[in-house]
Image 1: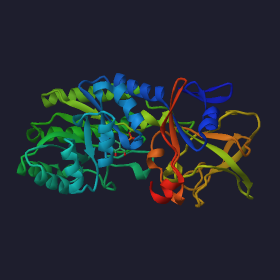
Image 2: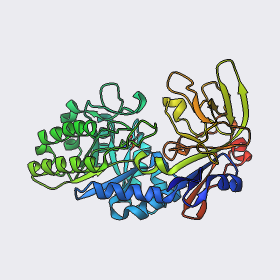
Image 3: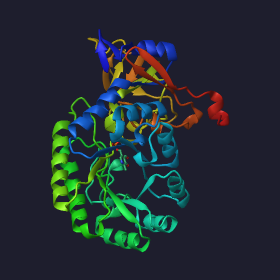
Length: 420
Ligand SMILES: Cc1ncc(COP(=O)(O)O)c(C=O)c1O
């Protein structure tokens, strides 16, 4: 677990400052027990069976983390893959082809052929993709994604339902999907939706679920081969101090009972699928960095660190809040308001910001050489990192109790300069 003991940040049994000392910064650190406990909690609290949990690999694709998730999830866990690369990683992590679903958008024929070649189920995002899939792979099984005209999420960029969203087949158009499926002899084994990311209220999830289930009910006749309904991911985690975790027991009970009721009306017990990404890995990860600069303008006291939005883009992309602590002085009586900024040559590269700009953060007085931890960084952190400014991506380590394992080496300068 990630905890504070004697005012110092610990990941498992290891002090964050020791990790920074041993491996250098910037460094992503993950706590294995947190990942395992999130998988366990989800599978326990969502009591409906049969249940399938497709971990949305895009949240964190590190191979060692995928292996931890597979090991903990046993037969419940599969992978939601958005690209051939994620399919390869899922197979490498030991997931079987039938445990993987390929859900992408603006998909090429080559990508579909790749998934088919690996015997991975394709989830079609549009009528045009379904038509091309039918031509490529007639008389096979398929899933398709519906846009239920209900969306939710922590930022407009991650709301994936409703008319502003490019995702899925519009719910009113599903009749056309059945025509295409019939033309090519496709067996529709799954229907899918994903309405957005960072949802902390069960009600929003249930509202979209009801729309999807009513669409399925309306088309019962055309869905004789249906085996599963995938309700998508999006379960949020708290980032801000004023946010509360989702009531997982309430979520699990509500979703399970609604789905069970739906199945009894449908006349068959179907598999219920979920696709959490953030929920499983976000709270397991921290990004460690070192302060190298402190400077003052008339408006802000800037604290410059050796990482930036090329390593954690969420504040810059969505104005997202991430808690930040000084690892060896998590609290202090002497505090100051600062703007923690990165080393990318853009003014937006500030970790303490919202959508509109800088929001100073009260931290214990910071000096050069202090190690900071940017918390709740396990999801959409490294997986969205880049080599912008021709900088290396950081290393990643996985902590299990006292055990520390390097699960990705920091990139070398020759990697970013010569691509190797
Ligand atoms: C289709 C699909 N499923 C699942 C997810 C996972 O979302 P989250 O990490 O919020 O659970 C995403 C995220 O973009 C997605 O696009």
